[in-house]
Amino acid sequence: MIFDLMEEPWLPVERLDGSTTQLGLRRLLLEARELRRLAAETPTMTAALYRLVLALAHRAYGPADADEWGKLWRGGFIADPLNDYLAAYPDRFDLFDSQRPFLQCATLAGCPTSDAAKLVLDRSTGNNATLFDHTTSVDQISLDPDQAARWLVTIHAYDPGGTKTPYRTVKSSKRGLANYFGVVIVEGGTLHETLMLNMPIYNPRREQPQPTSVQDRPAWESNAFPNPEPDQRSSRGWTDLLTWPSRRILLFPRESESGPVVASVVITPGTELHGALPDIELMSAFRRPPRKPRQKKWEEFRALRLDERRGVWRHTETLLLAGDEQQRRRPRALDHIAELVEDGIIGDDTVYTLRVFGQRLGSQAAVVASWSEETVAAPVALLRAQHEPAGPIIGHAVDLADQVAGALRDMEAGHAAAMSVDRDGTIDLAYWARLPGPFDEFLRALAEARRQHQPETAAIDIWAEDVRKLATATADRWVYGSPRTGRNMSEAGRAFGKFTGKLHHLVKVFTAQATQFINKEASP
Image (cartoon, rainbow, N blue to C red; front, side, top):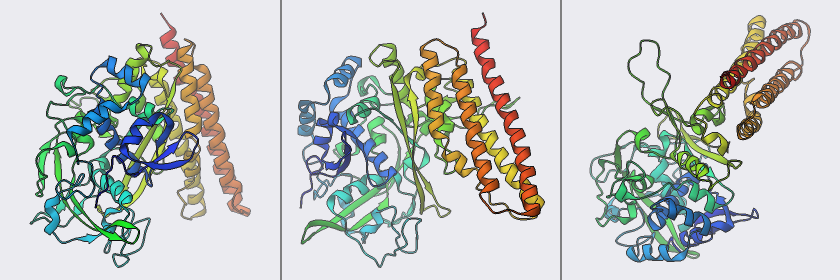
């Protein structure tokens, strides 16, 4: 049985006209200008597939320097470099190869197998019920080769860890690397643009991007057969990290009436990473808490993570803006894009999208609780902003949203205390859900003001008014959305009155503080 991932359709994509299809790796790269994006079954799968495709694109195309990057940007991915690369690694992309199955370890053939459901992170296995699925291991499934291939890639990046089938004695495994951070993709108008925007200069001989070494290679290039025993090591470089073998896996195909299917699998502990992610992971953002007075050392960097309650846009300052590397580190692709703007390759009026993917694990570490995919506008005019007032204004804008949400919760809590009842605690959910769109507009207005060398006053006023309207609408629904009579209505009205007064004060303070930074920059 053969399933060649270069040629067989297995990567789910959205075309420019909105239709969807599946393509092999070769067509995906060569037709990238005709495609909109990768769009898989889950956000985590989409993120894992992007990382795989980027590793392949780097190895086939580089680009080794700025000139090569420019040629790829203008001319697209052509066939010859890809063909040359594949000629050097024949048969490395066959999912069912008997010696070197793709991203697998053939030595596991003698281990006890599990149902193929073990591959699917949203299905229950054994006694582990997930948020998405409540079947048990009795309900056996089989996967078509394209499905199995997608989950194989996803498991390496996002497996939640815990106890696995041991090759010999080691059962314990740590979670896949992508569980520790939100994966950030800079999205352009086509898949080709997206891949290029996330491909910094790649030249292992010059240790680019740092800390890439000359030994860097993706998992499928290794000449040695995968060691079935779990191990620990440091990353050799960027494509090594993109295809990190966090598990040892072997798929077991069988023939069916419709063709080959994967009915069973072995998943054992794999390779544990040595090294600090903030120093080597390029597709996420990291931030340290501010140092307190008399605090001599910085705290450890914390990776950007998605929050179910509040949007990722709250981390815009860390995501977008250049700054002190001691305090925050944005995704490395944005540094490269800022250079392209400086060189005139990308116009400073361009607005890209940051698409952020994440996974949250349940109280039982081996259970997936939720997936997330969120977006933030990325005006390139802000990517070069290294000084006041852009950073402080964005910071105050996020603070305003936080403080207003607190005022909404206080309104609900005050009423509940007066009525001696438990509060619901969800009053701010609808408020948070409606803020991402207005915040994107605020960022665009802020960027346009910088482009035109005008004060950012209009952007500040837009955000203040949007927050005021959304918060007031949320409070109105709370007061009038439930039937209230007598003392209940009276106490609700009193709590509402306190809230409106506090809202007015918060908006006024925000406007004054944000405007102060504009005036500081304008002063000689």
